[in-house]
Every structure is written in C-alpha cells, then in structure tokens.
Amino acid sequence: MSSCAAGDITLLLQAWSNGKSDALGDLLPLVYEELYLTAKRYMSRQKSDHVLQSTALVNEAYLHLAKLGRIEWQDRGHFFAFCARVMRGILTDYARARSYQKRGGEFQHVSFDEQCIATRSPHRDLVALDDALRSLAQLDHRKSQVVELRAFGGLSIEATAKALDISTGSVKRDWRLARSWLLRELDRGSRHGH
Image (cartoon, rainbow, N blue to C red; front, side, top):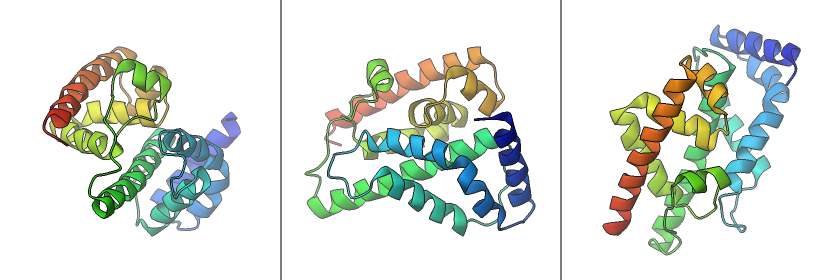
C-alpha cells in the first residue's frame, strides 16, 4: 500500500472518529483489497461448501461497520485488527448456527500448533478456537490481540508490534505464551468432548 493511501486511510479514520459518517464510504475503496485478503485467509480455513465467500464476508463486515456508532480509531492497525475480529465473529456465528442446526455433526477437531498457524490449516474448529480466544482475552487481552493479528489478520511480528505499540520481543514472547496456553485449552476441550 502506498504511503499516500496509508495517509488517506489515517485521515479518513480520524474523520470517522470525529463523527463524519460518510468517511466509511470513502474509506472502503482504500481498504477493500486488504480486507479481501484477510477474508480470503479466513475462508481458506472453511469447508468449500461454506455459504459465504470472501467477497460476501467483506460485505458482511462492512455492514457491521456501517452499524457502528462513533469509534475512536487509534490507527490503521487498530482498524484492520477490529475488522479481522468482526470477520472471525461472523464466521463463528455461522459455525455456531450450523452446529445448533446439526447438533454438532459438522465440528472438526481443532489443531492449533505452530505448524497449523504457519500453514493456515483448514482443520480447525472455529467455535472452539473463538471460545479459547475469548477466555484468553479475559486473562490477558494483549496476548489475545497478538494471536488475532498474527493468526487471523496475517500480520508479521513487526506489523503486530507496530499495531499494538509494543516491542517485537514482546510480540514474540506473547505469541509463544499465547500459543502454548491455547493449545492446552483446546486439548482440554477436545478431551471433554467440546
């Protein structure tokens, strides 16, 4: 993304934060490609017959954003992390609804290890992972943000550090500890039939 576009994004986020409601409409063309790539990463983990496609996921996220009131956006990293969280929530809601309809028949075992994250494996139970991330957020919000940005937002260690305004060493440490904690939680859940 060009520095001009990045600057435009920042200005539009500031305008939106200041109550200019049409700033979101001006912002979408500048962020669409990055949002689409995030949606595509999410959709690559879903079954091929999923009712949503990447474009539809971006559209659903946009509709969610359009319903929001005034938000104090810190920066573009905060915006993209929020959008990634919204997309994860949309997919989790679909998975929960499907689970209720099929009484759990569509759930797959969660495999959340370093190799799984690195290869973005489709063999994850999004609902169990979402539940574990929510629990982690209650214990340590920053570690859950690191996982959100790295695993779901696709950000590098350096970009995650910049988005959270922390050192790369802190990101590496949080990433390592959060992964270990999540693995234990997901393993405990699978042993208890979740």
